[in-house]
Length: 123
Image (cartoon, rainbow, N blue to C red):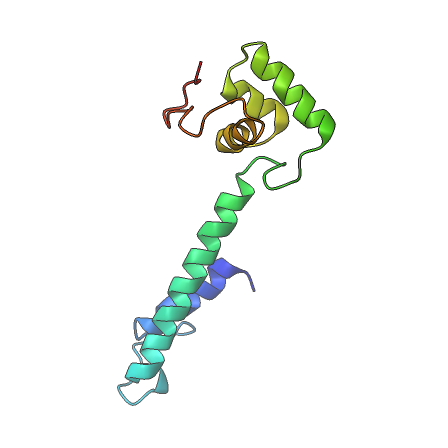
């Protein structure tokens, strides 16, 4: 079962509806007990958060979080010194612009406040 289907089923139960029939659950149904309802809502929220994390992760560049090799460091330094925009450098290295900024800071090429969050280059 995928997350979307599970989430739909849990939300349907939490709203007091039988997911199989669409009928409203009777007041004495175990899914109508306060502790069970709270558990269903917590499960729903956890699945939603996990789904959003997965979507964000899938949209990140391929090299996010991977270690930097010496060759990649050297290429980054050369690209930075050539005046290439940080957005272009990020695309070339398949990393985020924040990742490029952090690496340049670690290499002593940018000060921690060297990049404004609007996507512009520090230079």
